Amino acid sequence: MALAAVGAWLRDHARALRWLQWAVVLIYAFLLIVPACLPLPDDTARMVNNLTVLAQFVFWGVWWPFVLLSMLLFGRLWCGVLCPEGALSEWAAKRGRGWPIPRWMRWGGWPFVAFALTTIYGQLVSVYQYPKAALLVLGGSTVAAVIVGFFYTRGKRARCRHLCPVNGVFALLSKLAPMHYRVDEDAWRAAAKPGRLIPIQAVDCAPLQPLRHMKGGSGCHMCGRCSGHRDAIALSWRSPDEEVVQVAATEADVWQTLLIVYGLLGVAIGAFHWTMSPWFVALKQGLAEWLVERDWMWLLDTNAPWWLLTHYPEHNDVFSWLDGTVLIGYVLATALVLGSGLLLCLALSVRLAGRWQWQRLHHLAQGLIPLVLASACFSGCRPPR
Ligand code: SF4
Image (tube, rainbow, N blue to C red; front, side, top):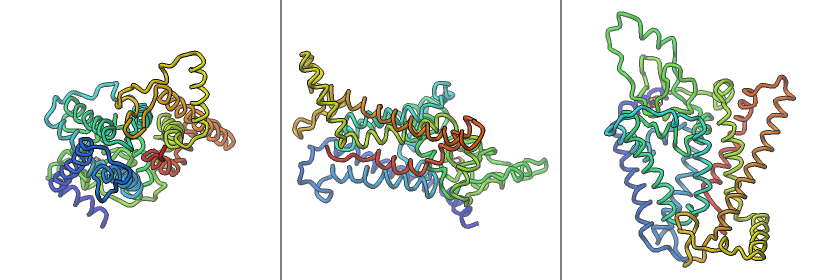
């Protein structure tokens, strides 16, 4: 009951939550834009005396790990209550064209593709080190959220549901949350009986969840707006394995499996450890010698712009075209080797346990979600080069 009251409180304080969202938008914009306009800090700069270093710490040392952790504890409360991109997208959608969500946007592969592309691009421009790169990657994502919001749906979060680069990660992690909005279908039906005197209000569910048949919490943004709807929906406790064991048995799909094994346990790990990899260095040196022997020097040039490849000569941090190419190849090769190895192990386990079924493979892959948390944390940081 106490938890249901929290859900009802969220529903009843939508206005206060909106102010909170705008406060987060302002802090986010400040920490993203101002450091990008300042000179880069030197090696002696610290959080206490340099805004750029403080912003880096807030984004990658506080925000990213704690948002991931919050998914495990409270589901996607961050998305529904605090996320600046979600808030801006919904705000734009209330004022925009209201077009229906097109088919291309509904494609199930976006969570995997958007995560992989953003992770690799973030490494190419060194998003974790340089404020201009952070402004480009995070700010670009925010601008995209506003544009998509402006054109598609009337007041909903189409971009959050379909195109957000971390939507897939958050959807996986929130499956382990010990709370969700439980739907009592009997109470739902009873509320629809003729003779009911109080009219039923429609729910403004921004991520467009199928409320009546909602089983898990992976698509729900925990905003509380549906709390108490038809006396059938309430924030409730559940076992942390409930969604993975029961709901995912039928809902797990191929894109979630690919995101787990090739995305979060492949691309993210490759993107984390390439800076420390002796294989990466050996491969790059071998290729550089091979290019020099053939007099193909243009690949060794470091004339790419900062928004394509890292380019900060004043900090001796410049990528050549070869660096960028080898980085992409290395991350993809890591993803291929690790992901295929994991997939093979899962497939063997399914086969050894009985009759082969693709759905059982996808279901078993969900057992790797706790590992995904560690890997996702790694994907938000990078050891020094
Ligand atoms: S189902 Fe929709 S309205 Fe209900 S809490 Fe989740 S996001 Fe909010």
